[in-house]
Image (cartoon, rainbow, N blue to C red):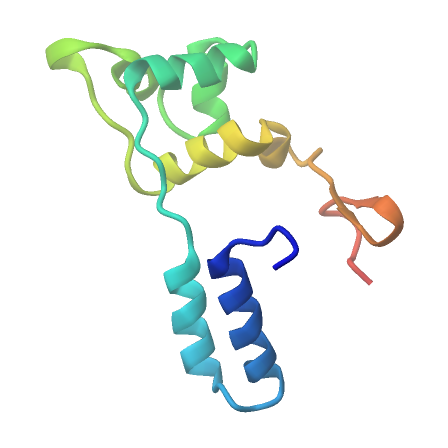
Length: 125
């Protein structure tokens, strides 16, 4: 399996079947949706650690996440004042934890053929 997980191998196989026309577009979309990883839930300490690892104040972190400073304060609070992120905010936290803030500020680059970085301003072709 070349170090791939079972789900990666199955997804690759279904994708191959889609490419040759044995799996229709709707089935492929449903399968892709089922393969998305669950978004991690974060504790107040974990959210604070993500912010601090990026060397940001609560105000700047809130700006990156397009939310209010009060919301970030509540996410990082303990006890009755605590609030947990959900929806898009939770997904953004997950992305920032995994890839860093460069994903949100436009400096993120992905490596494609020949290790050439591609940013949002360039095309993949």
